[in-house]
Length: 265
Image (cartoon, rainbow, N blue to C red; front, side):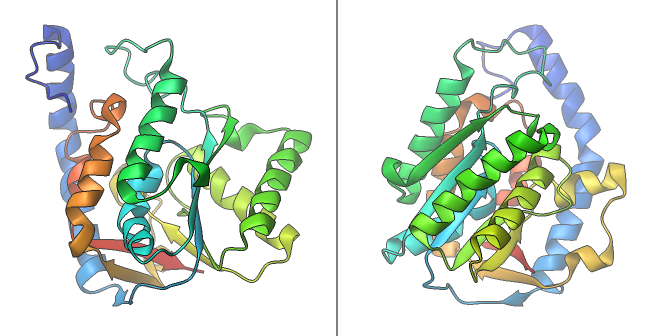
């Protein structure tokens, strides 16, 4: 994992990271407060469920950040877990022009995903890539949308999960919100009885800017203790080397706690 003081980084890169660090401190403090409140007061503890699961991830790393602990715990008990990546991750560097975007970033992120999930106990055969264009999941034509829904339906009917994990419906990224809507539509089309659980990625962080978070959005929160696999989750996060300097400084601190938060429908 690279660090802003890494000699391989240019002076411009280090200055940009330092500026981002200053700008992100209010968001980091806000995210810490909301996360702490949800963990200690706004959620109820639940045991690990033995139900087979599918985790839908908009990009390569969301699944590990939001669900890495529960994935590892389920796999320790040989509970089937499938992970589905919705987009190809090709635009991850476009929001950081001070970093060069590797021409093979799609393949880099795909391999990082396989490596991270291997750490968590998920085999490559249980990892699926739908390869939709990064950043455009919410802009699909009706024909494209139906095609993606049918691919999800196929996976749902093939693996018959009893739990489905999706990003929170108000996560402040269009691909995250689109993933929630597409998966929800696919579940209805497949006519499956599943438990739908939402995991937050940007929900606590960016609500400070966009004021999109409301008390009702924090209802039905549950927390799972992941202390026994906490280090395993951190190793999986570290496998996403290409993403480390793209995330806001302090953002990953929220994923070092011994808990994971989910919101039940």
